[in-house]
Each structure stands twice: as structure tokens, then as C-alpha cells.
Image (tube, rainbow, N blue to C red; front, side):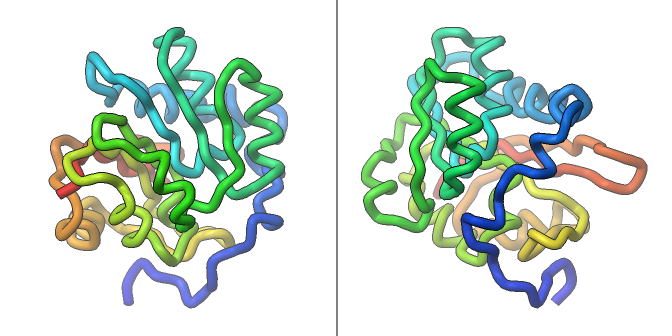
Length: 191
């Protein structure tokens, strides 16, 4: 199948942050997180960052919305450790997005952000299904392959096709990270 790997999902130990935590990474790619922050509605009660990684989205979010009620969830202890060091005033939780205990934290009025996560997990559909119906989901996925990607998408149509039974797309944009590499961003609502 086009855009899919035969590779299996990696364990939490794989996600040490080696790539994200290299000097200069945030300075070089911080604009990607700013693009997602700009996608947020004018008013929101709470944001749950699904697969929050090293906390870069949280950093940009709080710079622009200092009073945002934020919670980040990631299954990597290393990522959560870095997030807590970067933004100690925020709430970060070690947890698996497939875990029913994590799903109990979800409320329909919250905004869900899932940046650069769905391509890493085999259970992307199940993760989206766990989001309450009518909730707003902002997510991004890449157009390029990587050793950590279970899948990638060549264009927006492939993404819409994959998730159309679960999501209503309200808006989308493409952010270029290089001449050939792109990040597709979507503002969608859970059906």
C-alpha cells in the first residue's frame, strides 16, 4: 500500500529525543509548532496534546497564550522528562494513548492536538476513535518516510481518505520543512 511501511511501531524506549533534542532543532523547526498554534480557535477551555514529545508545542502555545490550560501526554519517559524541564509549570503525563485510563481524561469541550504522532503508531484509527465526538482535533502528519514512521502520506487526499469516517476536516495547510519534505496540518472535528 502506497505510503505505508512494513515496519512495526517502536517502543517508548526508542523515543529518547536524540533528534529533537539536538542543539538548534527547536530554533530551526519551531515555526512548525507556531503554525499549529495559529490553527487554534480564538477561545478554548483546555488543550490535550496527544504524543507531546519534548514539549515544543507547549512552549510555543504558552508564549502566545500564557493562561492556556494545557496537558501533554506521551508514552516516552525521556520525552516527558524533557517536557517537564522545558515547561515545569505545565501538566505532563507519561501514558499510552491506547490506554483506557488516559481516555478517561478526555472531554468533548477540550481541543486535542496530535502533532507528528499518528505516523508513529499502528493504532492511529483507534487513537482518533478515543477522542470524544464533536471535539476539535488539530493534527499533523508528514509526507516522508523515516525509520520511526509506520506510515506517511504523499498528499492531503490520502490523509482525508484514511480518516474520513472519523473526522470532518474544517481546514488544512501544508508546511514545508525542506524542498521535498512537508508536514500536512489539519483542523478537524470528530464525527
